[in-house]
Length: 103
Figure 1 (tube, rainbow, N blue to C red):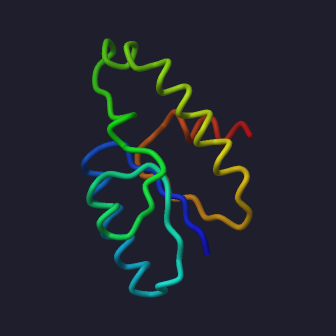
Figure 2: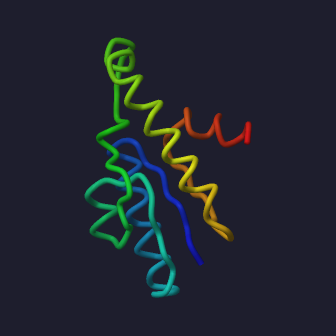
């Protein structure tokens, strides 16, 4: 089974790392990948994108990073939609959730 994980800030990284460890304990063959921080990567998640690329706070920082975030969002959606039989675990990333609902 392949699981896509999305965490965009420190608490999501921490929570997801615990989930990843538990899933890996249940099934070593499970493939987990997505937007990840250091803790998730250490737990066994293949980091396709770094959570620091989408971790923003406040309107000004969002506006500064918006072009980069939108480009990243497109890449994430295209990557995840190409994979069959994938479970998606989204911890924090509203912009991606809204886009996936529209697909």
